[in-house]
Image (cartoon, rainbow, N blue to C red):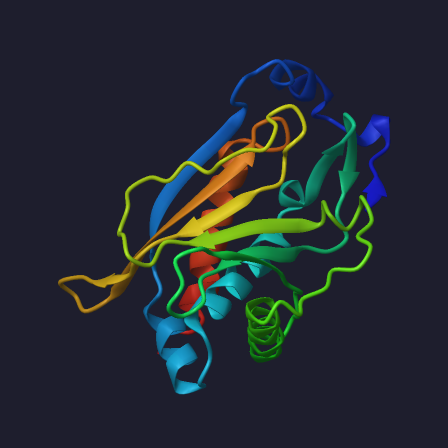
Length: 214
């Protein structure tokens, strides 16, 4: 991560404002058309979950605010964003947390993170010594594929220090036009971004999804 200089940090007053809030987060949800990505994943033997993770991270990397982090009250800019995501192994009810890796190529991304899921299932995933910086250069990702929800609020470890964005999605269903629609929600710290940035993010996620539509 790179330290953001004070003269270039325009959100200092918002950090001070929201530092005293019990729940200083924005949480927004939309419906996304995932028809094209779903077909692409199935035709190429990819996990839709992994393909959607790739799309969500790719969009986040295009918006600087999604790469902002506060570390002990000081602003930093992430140079990368890796997924920290939940995985429910077949036949299990308790989820695993998998520490993934972002790759620019979607097929490579899916391959790498499917392997990380298998390693986690077998208790073989070893994080090693993770630096304070690397532990912040992530996005928390989860999926509830059994429910087509309208809103989803995520758990927070400590509202004073936890400012990592959380991305979630639910069950996709076919609408009357034959399109697969899926609920997608974003939870972010208000000190680091506003509703405007979340709105732009949602648009960019859908724009990437539309690239898969034929």
